[in-house]
Amino acid sequence: MTEQLKAFLKFLALNRNASPHTVRAYESDLAQFIDHAAALAGVRRADVKPAHLDRTALRSFLADLHKRRRSRATAARKLAAARTLIRYLRREDEIEGDPGAMVSTPKREIRMPAHLSESEMDALLGAASEETALGRRDRAILELFYASGLRLSELTGLDVEDVNLSARMVRVLGKGRKQRLVPFNTTTMKAIRAYLNDRERIVSDPRSSPAEAGCHKTDGRHNHRRDPARSQVRRREQHPRRHQPARAAAFIRDAPAAARCGSAVHSGTARPRTARHDATLYARERGAVVGRV
Image 1: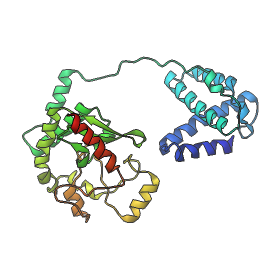
Image 2: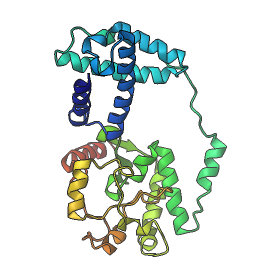
Image 3: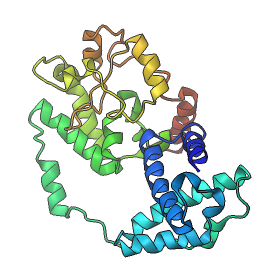
Image 4: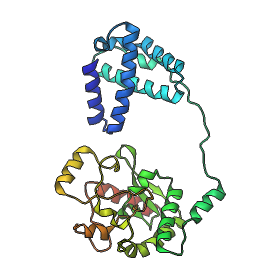
């Protein structure tokens, strides 16, 4: 199974566009499953055959996870990884049938998500003072974060061209590099517009560390929009990178900081980066949204 597992992981990375983190998670879960199948069959791991990954092995693997007090969510994830591998082996004519389809998924525990109360949310939004430029910036970040329901990584990855104030929509590149349009309310629009009036003054202040963030480079662990191949190309081009500070102050691209790095920019907005989005697709989506509004 060693060669089959390597081929499967390569298939995930190339054909399924899976991130390195996802590939490593699959490798870890499947290594545990194959080790269990080897122990069940009484053979070495190197001698495990695709035929050993049958319904009995799957059910025994789930029972072992339950015995070791693993959560239902963990068991369901590992079973999903094993099913994906088995379907791949079936497609490659390594096995016959689909034993994974005959094993039911453990029911997940129903938990109520933790959330802030209305008073706690008001206190959080009110913590950003609207009397200063930096306070208005922080208020815009919090309002957009609260109104849109974005992940923090998605929020810090936004650029100024991703925000459409007239349509009150923001374009987001989420998990799996999938784009989506997310609406936000009028309060958020006013907060962002108030920040944009101060943005040039904020980013021109050398004491503002987020303003200088445009000069720094980051690796792939901090920017989910970059894949290894694209990183190598951009590194050779010496393209300036954004830094994503923990306080999420860089959700609007810092054009003056990019200019200080030596990058050519347009007046008032950042230089467009064609490798990041499909401009034709976004223009069509934005036109449809504006038409509905």
